[in-house]
Amino acid sequence: MIREITAQELDPDSFIAEKVEEIRHSVGDGLAINALSGGVDSSTVTLLGHRALGERLNTVFIENGLMRAGEAGQVSEFFRALGVTVEVVDARAEFFAALKGVTDPEAKREAITQTFYRHVFGRLVRERGAKHLLQGTILTDVDETVAGIKRQHNVFEQLGISPQAAFGYRILEPLVQLRKDGVRKLGQALGLPKELFQRIPFPGPALAARVIGEATPERIETVRQATQVVERLLPGHGAFQYLAILHEDRVTGMRDGRREFGQQIEVRCWNSVDAREATPTRLPFESLEQLAHEITRAVPGVVSVTYNIASKPPSTIEAV
Amino acid sequence: MIREITAQELDPDSFIAEKVEEIRHSVGDGLAINALSGGVDSSTVTLLGHRALGERLNTVFIENGLMRAGEAGQVSEFFRALGVTVEVVDARAEFFAALKGVTDPEAKREAITQTFYRHVFGRLVRERGAKHLLQGTILTDVDETVAGIKRQHNVFEQLGISPQAAFGYRILEPLVQLRKDGVRKLGQALGLPKELFQRIPFPGPALAARVIGEATPERIETVRQATQVVERLLPGHGAFQYLAILHEDRVTGMRDGRREFGQQIEVRCWNSVDAREATPTRLPFESLEQLAHEITRAVPGVVSVTYNIASKPPSTIEAV
Image 1 (cartoon, rainbow over the protein chains, first blue to last red):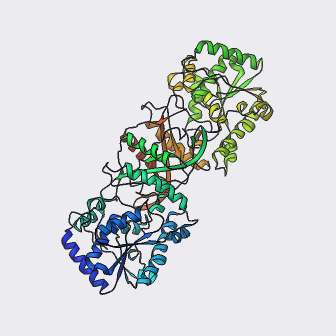
Image 2: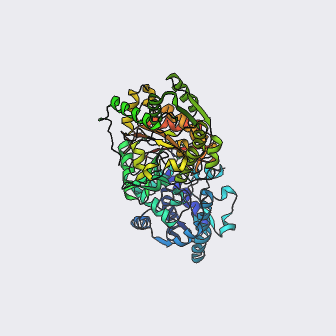
C-alpha cells in the first residue's frame, strides 16, 4: 500500500531533501537514466533526479513517432535553458513496427510498453551501463492500473512484475505518493517555469492513445494535426486537460457538393482537480464552432467533429 | 429538371387542387397504395392521396423493426382520428435478414430499398392489385441522390431506374417540387395537426441510418433507447432536427470502479431551414450534461456521449 501525500500536505522542500537522499542511496556511485517526454510528471522527475545525481543522470527524449508536432525540439531546447542536456533518440521505426496491425487498446499499450522498456531502454541501458531508470509514475497511474481500468505504461511493481528480472534494470518512482496537483507544486519548487509545470497532462502512450484502432504513421499524423488545433484554441478556459481523438468509424460528409465518406475527430476538454473525476468544460459555443471549423479545414479527410459531454465516471479521460 | 416551388411561392389551395387532379388522372379507377412512416413527408402525401382517392388509397405502416419506440401504434392511432385507416404490416424478419452482415452505409440503404420496394411492397401490391405507389419524395432527396451525397431510398426516376420495370408498379411523387418548409405549409393546409406537421424529420432507412456498422436487432434497440432520451429532452430549443447515433468504435469507460470497454452515442441537434445547410444548435450546457447523464444511465453498455459541433457542409445531417 502506497501512502498518499496530498498537495495540501506536501512540504516541497523537505520532500525534495528526502527524495534526493533516497535516489542517491539507491543509485550509489552508478549511472541512472530517465526518459523525458516534456509532460509535468517526467519534467519534474528529471529536475529532481538532476538535483540528486547531476551528470550521473542521463536524460533522453525517445522520439517514438507518437509525440505532438515539434515536441522533441521544444522539450530539449527548454531543458537546455534549465541546464539539463537532453539526448533525442530516434526510435520511430521500432514503435510503428510494434504497433502494426494492433487495434485493441490494451494490446497497443502493451506494444508500446514492451518497445519502450525492453527494446529501446534495454539497449540504452546496456550501452551506458546504467542500472536504474528514474520514472515519473504518480498515484493515479497506480490506482487505475490496479483497478484494471487502464494499464498505465509505467506501473510494474504494483502488478507484481519485477523490472529487474524482466528488463535488466531497477525502476525508481519518487513521485508515486503524489497526484497531479502535488506534482505541479513540487515542480514549481524545483524551478520548473510556470508554462511547463502547468502543462496539460499527456498520456504515456502519447498519440497512440488518441487514435481508436490501428496507430499507423498516417493516422497518427491526422490526430497530430487535430491536436495542434485543439492545443492552440483551448488554453485560456481554465481546463485541466484537452485532447483530440481520431475515430475509426467513418461518417458521411460532403465537400464541393459531393459525398465524402470521411473521418471524425472527437474533442474532449476536462475540468478536474486530480483526474479521478472530471466533467466536460462548459466551453462557449463560439469556441466549439471555431474548433470544428478549423479542424475540418486544416486536417485532410476529416468531415465531422464532436465534443465529449459525458463525465468521468462513466467515461474516462482518454478514449483508449 | 424538376421546377422547385419555394415555401414562399407555394399557394397550398391551388397546389392541392392541381395534385388531386393529377393523382386521379394517373390512378384512373384503379387502386393505389402508400406507406406511411409518420414523418411529415409521408403524412402529408397520405392526406393528399386520400383527398384524391378516398378509400381507393390503401395506407400501410411497414413495421420494419427500425422505427422508434411505439411508433406503429402512435401513427395508426393518430391517423384513425383523422379518418384514415392504417394497416400495420409486420416485416421485421425480412428487414433484419436483409441487413445481416451489411456494414457499408450505401449497402445498408440498398438492402432496405430492395426489401421495401421489391419484397414487401411487391407482395402487398400483388395481393391488392394496386398499380400505383404514392410517395412523399421531396426535392432535397433528389438533389442529394443525384449529387451522389446519399442514396435516398425513394428516388428512382432521377437515377434513370424504372420502378415499373424493376418492381411492377408506378411511383407517384406529388411533393417532389417542394422542400421541407413547403411540405409543412402544405400539411397544415391539408389539416395535419400542428404536432404532426411540425414533427422533426426522420430518415427513410429509419434507425438503420443511426447505427454505424451492422444494424442488428440488438444495436437498433440500443439506439432506439438513446433516441427516446433525445426526443424527450430536446424539443423546446427550436431545432430543425435532433438524433442519436450509435458508434461502432469502442471507448474505455468505468463503472463501479472497473474498466468497461463500452459504446458511444453521438447526439446531433441541427438548426436549419431546409436541410441543405445546417449548424449545430447552441444548446445550454445544462441540457448537454443532462443528455449525457440520462443516456449513460438509461442505455445499457453506453459509457460515452458526444455532441456534434460541425456544420453541414462538410458534415451531413445523418452520419450514414
